[in-house]
Image (cartoon, rainbow, N blue to C red; front, side, top):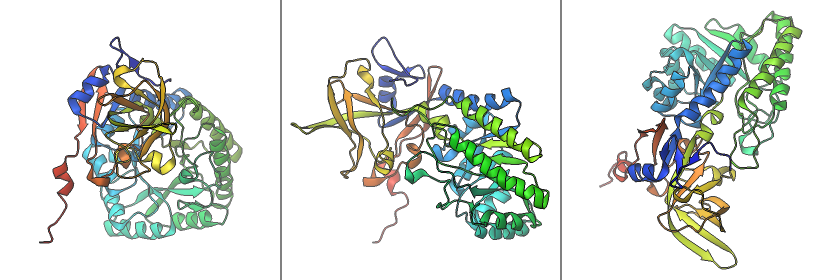
Amino acid sequence: MQHPFIINDQHILEIGGVDAVTLAKKYGTPLFVYDVGIIRENAKAFVNAFETLGVKAQVAYASKAFSSVAMLQVAKQEKLSLDVVSRGELHTALKAEFPADRIHLHGNNKSYEELSMAVAHGIGCIVVDNFHEIALLEAVLKEQGKQMDVLLRVTPGIEAHTHDYILTGNEDSKFGFDIANGQAEEAFRLVKDSEVIRMKGLHCHIGSQIFETDGFLMAVSRLFELVQSWHRTYNYAPAVLNVGGGFGIRYTENDEPLPLSEYIHALVSRIKAEAEAANIAMPEIWIEPGRSIVGNAAVTLYTIGSVKEIPGVRKYVAVDGGMTDNLRPALYKAVYEAKLANRADEEAIETVSIAGKCCESGDMLIWDIDLPKAEAGDLLAVFSTGAYGYAMANNYNRFGRPAVVFVENGVDKLVVKREEAEELTRLDLSYE
């Protein structure tokens, strides 16, 4: 198991220099624990790759993976830009005092309120997704007497090798303007002729958990077919080419992601070649890593409770969390690896299934995993839960969302409080 955490002399899993048992006793479970050093390493891998190649770029953290004030402060410290997709994510960014000119707004159904908020705060760019949005943004800009840079999100018809539910770059997608049916061309003409919208470039996103560069390179070539056409017809060249995110991480031993810098080297090489062939200036390259920055940086700690053995069938080991803090197994059939954090180097002797505590038969975190004999009170660590765990956390069965702790250089700090029962009713109104 090749996760970036160590086992100390007391046979306990350590995260960022603090042992898991200490963290669980101090903050309770379920608990998300992020090793901030790993977040920084992942961010630097992208930023340094561009700097080494001498290419102008923006590495925009896709905050949908995990958004909190503390997380966005770390992203700011690492000189990242930021993607937001809602009023709430934009509010969090502003609360973290993230530089507005490095914030990009996404979304396939941006509201008047969201666009107004983005324009009022002078964010750096809006990624325009549909014709309704073009008209709405024009109205907002004229109302506020401002202009705004935009990227047109286009669907290049390239499918990434990933789960159907998270494909976003193929033609049958709720996102973006399709190239093949002429929607991208029509959108370009509308934006080009606008008095208040400034056409900064193009955006595409072909999927998630991608372990090779071929899909990205095919998408770049498809985008440049469009760029060459617009250059010939309108003498237009994009200042920015945003190739999205989707860079894969390791969840289990079956996953073999590339080094993060390898994606960048391949993209820069292809974009340089395509720009030279099109006889246009090299555009600034933007990318949008989310999962690949935070995914492998976190562990979720659970306390084991009941154990149910069905002879000849299965042994269920239940924990004090589940689909309320990690929806991905139920939503995507996502697979994870885990260890007993308090006996981390003990030999595995049985195959068990890790059940959540929700009143839902589909609340299973891991179907089959080899562990030492687990007992009530043991601590289970599930790896690579840094992306789309807390972000998708919910209150099913009126469970409160877990706490989040950041650990760096042996120092732990609570950055998101545990949601207590009283807080679950704070929006409820009486009917009596």
